[in-house]
Length: 383
Ligand SMILES: Cc1cc2nc3c(=O)[nH]c(=O)nc-3n(C[C@H](O)[C@H](O)[C@H](O)COP(=O)(O)OP(=O)(O)OC[C@H]3O[C@@H](n4cnc5c(N)ncnc54)[C@H](O)[C@@H]3O)c2cc1C
Image (tube, rainbow, N blue to C red):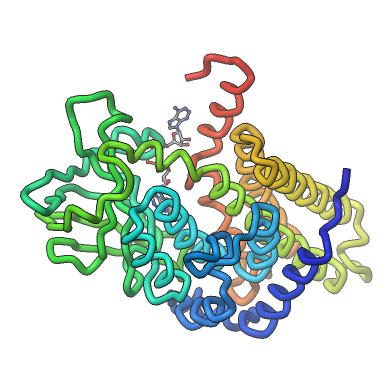
């Protein structure tokens, strides 16, 4: 068993570190977070390095990297900002669905533009009455001539309002079959007439924004259907392992950054004439925090290894999602405790970790849903 990175992976990791240190210092992250600005310039620079194409085949302008490579990139990027890594991931994973299920025309049209960052892709599943129970989504698309006519509402949509965004919209195309069998995926440019996007004020996600989207008689060309008619649920599930894996790697990177911040503070801050880190209560808390991050990282690496072997790993990736999100949220909370009043101050970055992490046990499949998936793989008929 080898826990080390190979030479190419070490170089990849170092190149992400070098880039992020130069282009994404803490002041830049604070500026975007404070002013609620999408990281357009940074993503453009990343696209020039080919990063948006990392997991795509060379045929469409990508580099064909594997799951472990992606996990390395996700972890390292998120050490600088979880949100920046999350926004990076969303476009890529929607693009991978087009790569796998799209027509040749769709692939040639969308993937190079996404890799070049001329367009962005966001994912729209959740609705006011369809959260964890995603298959109950009701936004409808009805074929009229050569167009889909879309009506309904999506909510909690990350980065839906970003410039040149194309929404990967999951819609109901057949109401008369079992719920999972009547869903399709349609690509919808966010500026199409009939679409209204409104910001939702949230604790975090300040750069990417969280939105609701209203669709009223929105007409989209028939050819924007991705994959088979009523084949949307299969698409939604098929890329989930790699998508979750990448997002879990960002949890480990961001959590490491929070531990580093708390450790630095514990070494520098003196009370009762000594650094607070020398109080066993604080030192032990930090030791537990680092142990948790290492465990979260190892769960990610195991799932990445399995994926790279072509072995299905929904159980392992769900464990990485469950443990990674809960670890990051717990560590950000402990980090605030260690930093005392400074942790609560907007002038220090720990509060951002707290805001970034808190939603992660809910979004992209809640902790409860991950436990259900894991329990079912253990043969338990959990509902
Ligand atoms: C900041 C943010 C960004 C998001 N970005 C996107 C996005 O880009 N695209 C998108 O489509 N969606 C997005 N979401 C939506 C997200 O995926 C949902 O919030 C999530 O699926 C949970 O749905 P819900 O909020 O409706 O909660 P609910 O499903 O109502 O769940 C509420 C609580 O009940 C629990 N629960 C529900 N069902 C069960 C069950 N069967 N067993 C046990 N417990 C259960 C949940 O775990 C949770 O604790 C985002 C959400 C947030 C907050």
